[in-house]
Amino acid sequence: MKKLLITSSVLLSAYISAQFSVKVSIPAYLSDSEIYLYGFNGSKEILYSKAKISNNVAYFKVDKQYIGMMRAFFKKANSSVNMVSENKDINLKVDLDSKYKISNVVFEDQTNKLFSNEVELQKKQELILPALIQIKDYYTPSDAFYKSLDSEINLLSKKDQTAYDIHPFLNFYQKNQKFSQQEKSAELTSQDFIDFFSKSGEYLETSTILKPALINFLNVSKSNVEGNVDKLLDAVNVETPRGQTIMSELIEIFSTYSMDKLKDKYLTEANNLKCTINDRLASTIKANKNTEIGAKLPNTVFVNPVHTKAKSLYDIKASKKIVVFWSSTCSHCEAELPKLLEKYDKLKAQNIEIVGFSLDSNLDDFKNKANIYPWINDSEGKGWYSSYGDTYNVVATPTYFILDANNTIISKPNHVGDVIDYLKLN
Image (tube, rainbow, N blue to C red):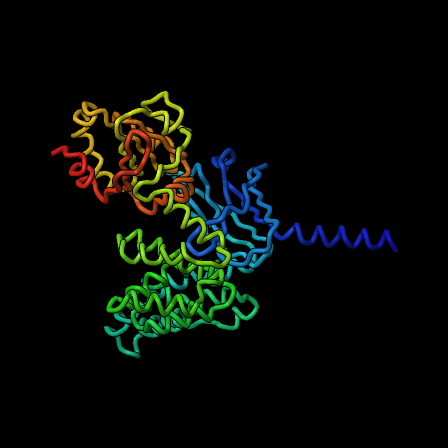
């Protein structure tokens, strides 16, 4: 009897620990790439597994239950693939184009075949269907081409809802796309959104719908944003994990769009909560505390530094520092950083140094651009998967901080012009 109990325990342990795997057939070019698998909690991507690569196959093992959207990020190609997990094995193949970007993805598992077919159908419905309907008006019903067009229009217009009966997450995702799509959401009321956020089941946080739906909710609520946000937070209850995740998302949205009054209000409410705080909201509170005026900006160790032998941010000695988060693919950075370059001699004369942190995924792109600028630059080479977002509350590029000699934040300019004005460089 004792032996039977031990065996049962081992089997139960194995079942719990081995949830599902993701197998990706990859081109030889990616055989030495770092490949990461992420899940979602709202708009936050959570690392679930790093690939083990052998014989042109990347293999991920996920030991936790997870149902929702996932993303595999291929660092060398600076490309990613979206997929759906129903806590079952996933199997796919990726191809690259001549520029080593992902050009084709073929899924072999049933869930993702259905998902990819749905995505393809939606594209055709948005891009092709309106054109076919317009073209059909130029023909008469007796024309053979009219009949062909009518057949194709009927084919594109049909949806087989029964296909989703055994796929509850895909059913949720497909039915609620209207909340995340700007054109369709304009037909909804703020109460429709509040009901959606408060009454949705367990899949909302992992669906990738939450953040775009919140942005559309704010647009619909533009005549009374604060009042409707208060109603929403009452409905979802900020003492619950969902309520706290939504509060966290809203604070970050307000920060992104410089809606400082609302950001400060709900950040204060978050700080005053007396209940247990979930990890999602706790990270938002911490990131904001790290970067408020008067706080000491957290140190970071350089990993790929340019124009310095210093080991970390704090090793840079200057009367003031301009810290800027940027990217070689950011159009606003392209417009603003040259203006700092124009003032660099003046800055150096006042013992003011610039330290840039790049959110590039490709280190060659980072170094090519960083070498144009004479100041210190560094990058983790992980794009938006780098640690900068969580540590420094970076939600857009460029983001600026001005520090004193003790690395205390004395200003948070919105644009390069604000940097120049604050330091009286005109």
